[in-house]
Amino acid sequence: MTTHARIIGVGSYLPERILTNTDLEAMVDTSDEWIVTRTGIRERRVVAEGEATSHLSVRAAERALADAGIAASEIDLVVLGTSSPDMIFPATACLVQEKLGMTCPAYDVNAACSGFVFALHAGVAAIESGRATRVLVIGADALTRHIDFTDRATCVLFGDGAGAVVLEAGGEPGVLGIVLGSDGSGAGLLRIPAGGSARPVVPEGVGDASRYVQMNGNEVFRFAVKAIPAATLEALAASGHTVDDLAWLVPHQANQRILNTVEQRLGIPSERVFSHVATTGNTSAASIPLALDDLYTSGRIASGDLIALVGFGAGLTWGAAVVRWTKPRPTEEN
Ligand code: UT7
Image (cartoon, rainbow, N blue to C red; front, side):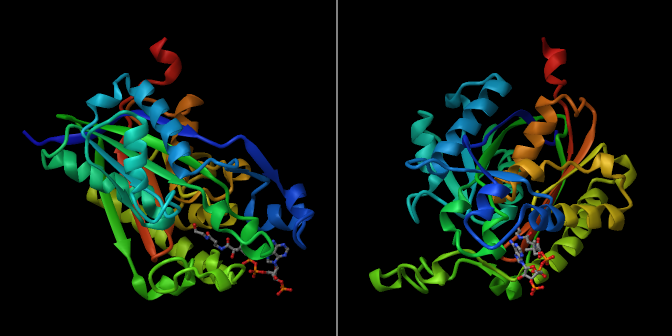
């Protein structure tokens, strides 16, 4: 019998501090009107002092485990997608594993904003190959730690957060089709040039713009509006479905204008394209599981619904997963 991976728990966490467009108006030469018109973002969350990606991840993971109704000790693999780890090493997944009192293997995946879909792919592969029975998949980022808050081109876009799902092996799918892609020729379009082995941060480099997120926004926009529809169609084809079968498209939350363009290109009504970018901003690898948890906890996905989770980001990277939702609405459980 073929083994499939099914999502049995979902959870997310947003840090408490809210940074509004009005707050940003006091920091850089921007306006609420410009940010809302060009991105749809009104506010985003920012990690507190002393808080890091692992803390956000632990909160999201605890909620996903509680939702799944299982103990942390029942997990046999942790895969965490992030591009803002607590440290270069050890992996943030190991910090999460220790904080949750687990003993299973744990590792990070860096695919920037596509990180959750890449981590999900690893978790699904581990289950389908029989190497794991229950996998905790996390997407988490605190990119505001790597933003130059004097650069209006980037500082209005990003926020922090974490989301997680618990996958379990079973006879029924689950995750039906999952596809990934990478194109390193676009590596220069979105990156943090310094801080790694190519350009280590040295004392005299402090304050250098290369320590922060740098982006060619127009090129990334053009890439996104091609990559999201293409990845969605590829994952749908891999699972034998079409756009018409989707109850929800759950895209990476980067910019409302990207989502609007994707709707037109895929011919999917906006009512079936999830967006809460107005209140989260771009939370990178956290974005898709945060969106999924919002849909689930607000009772907008029903058991049997077909959903597509689609990410894109630095690398360049992209990925999509078509999932048959098998959990009842939270209210139906009570
Ligand atoms: O997870 C993947 C991450 N990245 C993305 O998804 C980003 C994709 N790209 C985008 O979302 C958009 O390209 C941006 C929102 C980044 C920029 O929007 P745009 O409509 O492409 O604006 P633009 O870069 O073409 O800039 C238009 C103008 C420029 O002024 P001039 O040259 O026309 O005088 C910018 O200097 O807007 C100016 N501008 C701003 N003005 C006020 C750029 N940022 C701001 C700002 N406030 N924050």
